[in-house]
Image (tube, rainbow over all chains, first blue to last red):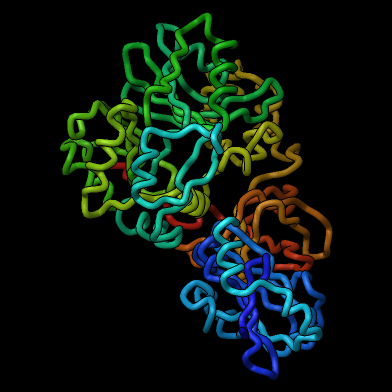
Length: 124
Length: 373
């Protein structure tokens, strides 16, 4: 299992061993509607788990993007900054937000797997 | 959720797949499956159908209705010709805004009034208490209200109701649309040409389906209604105006006709007149003023965002703001100290601790396309 989900509706994928990729879930982008703006974290900065690392906004609402695990930001998705609608059209792919060096794999292990998140999102 | 009211179009909204949210005590469609952005663009390019049945409709009836209503609003009611509509403001005795509204002279000593949904219970109680002895105050909870807005609204509606195309902005009349007893005004709250249609609740579903069957028309939710009205520079009661703001502070002097101003034939005689007229006569006394704002970076600036001068002094606050889908820029309205109210003035909005440069801009942000004939 290389993808896990947070209760803040982010996904994190560790299939690339260099750095984990983080984005918002299909459910999150659907709840927000058409995404028109993202504020991405600073490359090189370290955030604790649960800290606000970015913002995603639709016309009607703004939502914080939280760090699903602690770690250092090593890359942000400049294509998403230029075209925020990627978060709607391909939230699990081209619409990724940032890459992070995971500090503590235990934090990753404790996140939800896909069936658990599907159940969580259904009741959200 | 169970204590929420529903409009006569509730079943239709659910059938169309709307996302329903609580608004003004009602369960209302915030968007349909196509989404806010597509709905906004559709209204600006074709025609959008809005359910605004949460709004309050009432009639004021009797030979003294117009004179009585004039004692509650700073606008010219008495001289409004039969068949015409006007914008008005209910004021407190301190000259602040209880609600904004539209009223229509239907003739036969009858004014048809439309007020905001969240304010309607209070408005009706206020009107009843102040002028209930001089005219009949008749709420119309058995009526729905639909808005059809956009450059193709006339084409779509005239197909069902020949003659509506003859109406001009802020006029109206009775029409039978298909078999429904409608009162139609050529007005709305999107900045586009269009109509508002009052219809008995029992006929609302039939009317809405007939309108949606027209090729130009799609259903539009409250989300797009908000982005459309903001681009049109129109106030949202509760955000941009409320009982802490006066008409002059809200830049609504245009709504106060000369006849009710100092030196006019019926000057004053409305709640808070001394203060309201003093502010019109001496704008230097204004503590703050509502202005339009455009961000110079592509960062949405939302309500309650602090506004600062370029040297870091707090000068005001944003009351509505979003990325305008048509102008394709972040637009906002807010209140600033009068020294910063001139168009072109540079200010900063403090968004998540960072200064976003903004410029005071003329409203509307998108050109109004009302059909004035």
